[in-house]
View (spheres, rainbow, N blue to C red):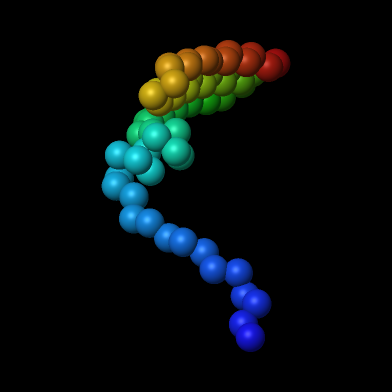
Length: 64
């Protein structure tokens, strides 16, 4: 007698998979670094969008 559990499978559409995995999203980022004899200046930006919403942020750092 075979006691291996049986698993039922079903096909899912791409739309159904998007709902499970969080949907389709995108992101972008960029940065800049300027070095001078007086110091450094660094800046960065990022943004991300998905079905749940949009987020964005940035930073600025100066060193001497």
